[in-house]
Structure formats: structure tokens, C-alpha cells
Amino acid sequence: MQTVTELNERFGGGAVLFGNGRNGLPVAVLQTNGCEVEVYLHGAHVTKFTKLGRPVLFLSAQSHFESGKAIRGGIPVIFPWFGPRQPDPVGQSPMHGFARVSEWAVESAAGGGDEVSLTLSLALNDLSRSMWPNEFKLTYTVTLDRDVLGLELRVTNTGAEGFAFEEALHTYLAVGDVRGVSVEGLAHTTYLDKTDNFAEKSQDAAPITITGETDRVYLGTAGTCTIEDPGAGRRIVVEKEHSEATVVWNPWVEKAKAMADFGDEEWVKMLCVETANVGRHAVTLAPGAVHGMRVGISTEAV
Ligand code: TA6
Image (cartoon, rainbow, N blue to C red; front, top):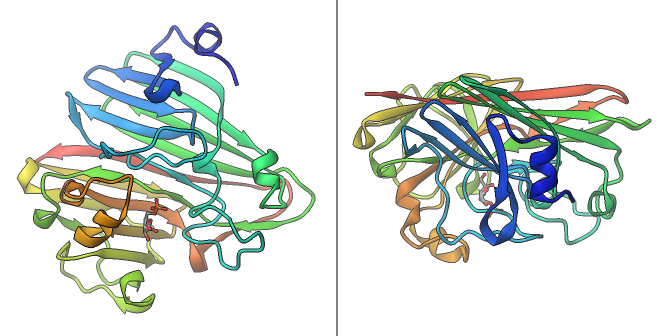
């Protein structure tokens, strides 16, 4: 892996600077006027997006920052399976795949002024080979365009066999109080309720409110979600492309207590609204083919 000095010599110097982050893990900082983003090479993990100093993303104070472990909060990159691997041919496949616990390489850094971008990549490696037989390359572009955070995950099948995969950008949004927010953009869609044995249910027309543990996979939806957060005086807009599923998650009280890398009271301050292709929307990729999923995250005052 390249040192921070080498990274700055090769890619730094513009509006992207590399440094030693938590536990000495390499981190890239992207800045535009009034906004800042931090991306760890560990998991290609966006851990921070602030606008005028205010966090848009939630990051747990209890998060791990170490090799082999996922960071809790920010935007974990989920690939090539979502949730527990089913079936699990190797028996110990990590939850949510291996991309978020892998070390990614820097491909390029560009821009300045109002638009800055960083591209990272992950290709077939010993970890992936040990649990997944396919030849692939991931490229992940993080763009800060004025005050909009843009993300694109591209999956390339570099092998001679087709393969199927699931993916998600598992975004942890920062909210004032999750009990006072509402989510719009998923009306009249179907969802699988993971708190009710994956029962298939229909979402009515009303905005979604969070009144208990919530873990839902919304299917067949390419729409924009808006998270109204009057308590924080803002709404967060999550606009996506080439994604057919949206996951909404809050662990609430008991699940929060059960997670070692999450504070007991932190469930109040976060809501995951995830951009995904999972379950019946898993992507099948022929040899040589590429699939790109995009999301843009922004805020508006209310
Ligand atoms: O995206 C929601 C979910 O799949 C939940 O079921 C919950 O497990 C969450 O992800 C967090 O998973 P993690 O492996 O990061 O603890």
C-alpha cells in the first residue's frame, strides 16, 4: 500500500490531500467552498460530509478503524452480497461482503474550486479469491460538486464467466432526532420487512416515520428520497441512478445496545437510507460488461 507521502506526491496537491487518519489509516480529504469530505482507503469509506461545518453523515463514536473490520457510520460500500451471504459456501463470509473491509487503491484525483473528485479501485485479491470465484474490478468515484456529494460505484466483469452480485451504498444520514423525521419518495412501493421475517408489505401514500426498529428493503424503486428533518431545520435529498432498491434502517433501542461498535443512544441521531441493487434486483454481468450505480446527496434548509 502507498504511503501518505507517496499518495500526496502522485495525487495530492490540488483540492485532494492525503493524511493519516484514525489509527493511522490513510484518508483523503476533499474540500470545496464550505464543504468537506473524508474518504478512507480502508473500505473506500466516506466517513464525513460536512456543509458549512454541519455533518450530513452520521459516524459512530464507537466505530472501529482497523484492518479487517468495517467502519460504523458514513457510507459503507457493500459488495458482492448484501446482508448475510445466502447460501454461504465458505461458512464464514463477512456480513455485507468484502469490499468494506478491503484496502482500496487510489486511481486518480482531480479538480479544484467548486468540483473535486477522487477515484479508488479494488480488484480481485487474496481476500476476494478466498471467498468469491469471480474476476472483477470496482471503481468508485467520490465527487464533491459545490455542496453535493456524488458517488458512483462501477463494477466491471474482467473475467470470462458471467456473474451476479448485490451492491449497496449503505448511507448513514445524520438527523436531529429520528423520531421527528419523515421519509418521502417510497409511496406505493413494495418492501420486505426484515423485522417481520422478510414479510412482503405495501407502503401507503403517507411519508414514512420511524417509531421502532426499522429494517426494510424497498423494491422496484428508482425514485429520489427526501428526508424531512424539521428538528434540524433541513431536508436531505438522496437522488440515485441505476439502483432499483432502497433500504431504510434504524436499529432503535435494543439492537443499538447489542452492537459493540455503536453507542447505546446513537440510534436517535441516525437513519440509513441506502442506494442498492439487492435480492430480486441483484445485477447479472456478462464478461467484459460494466454496471454503474450513482447517488447524489444534498441538503436544503426548511
Ligand atoms: O442495511 C440494513 C442492515 O442490513 C441491517 O439488517 C443491519 O444489520 C445493518 O445492515 C448493519 O449491518 P452491519 O453488518 O454493518 O452491522
